[in-house]
Length: 421
Image (cartoon, rainbow, N blue to C red; front, side):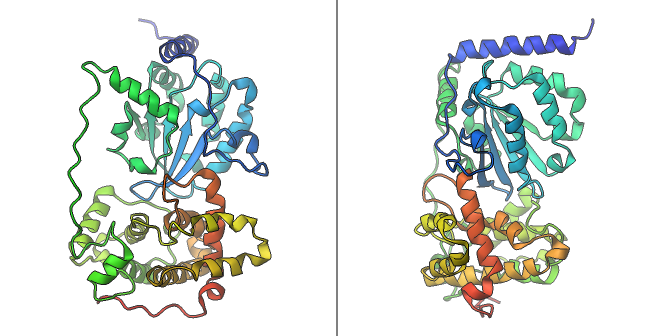
């Protein structure tokens, strides 16, 4: 039996794409309401469509990057070379850290599909720098078109990279892989998912009954408020998980290159969280990996019911880019001084440590700017939804100022903390 040529496969892919269009209806590309709206953005012509979103971290402390095909306008309205440059421009800010990509396939049509040559060039452009720290690629709502395209490009794709790919047929299945609430999902994709579920044989799958939440344990550390931890730990100012991870990292991690950029084994992080929540001792020495306490610290901050910088301050933080550069440090100082005491004390303790990390940036490659990219979205988020791509810049600028100008904003001395033994 003769092998199918690449040209024949390309023709088959086009046929499958046309079938998808017939089944899905014509539709039209939509501009995402979380798209970049600042005309001064260097790639505003592409970013304004909302094709690409960076939505904070997933369950495992990895940056989540979302690509939505349904937001792509017709090809004559989008310069695909600019799109490729914008992809690289965005990824360049995160590829030194472990990251995850979610690709929403719904909405790719003959009218907005990039050429086969562009796709090939794009894959080649994404060299090892982009691929080595990509830990997972989720393709949501795949069709036969995707599978044919995979065969076309298989000769270019390494076996190691191929193992990172996971097909996800329904949005509900994403919950098995990552924190569904961290995602920014276009409304068109949600509607398509509902139609797919409804068309399943026998109707949509039965909804999963979620048991009522259990009250937190007295020893709970993750997913409870700072005030709760303080009340249950004899008025301790710094949560044990924060003081213990920071203490270990001060001793063992300050010179580690890329500290806070790597992820750790998912099950190991779950096991350590369980130990903390049960009030059992955690000995980071036994794990032999300095990135483990680093991930635990980020996870603790991310799972606070209200972020350390609080929902109330979110809009003020986003406005930092409207403040004249020479006045931004004093503005940051004014904002953090409005925090409630528990939040202020923990923030000061954390930022003091991050300032120490930045002082070792020649060794660890973690400048105040790099630390801001990692910690910003873990310190501030909106009360509803997730951090949009356009919000990342002001959040990172604000966080960078906190770290770089720690002594001016918080005072010259690191806080003395009341911690548990």
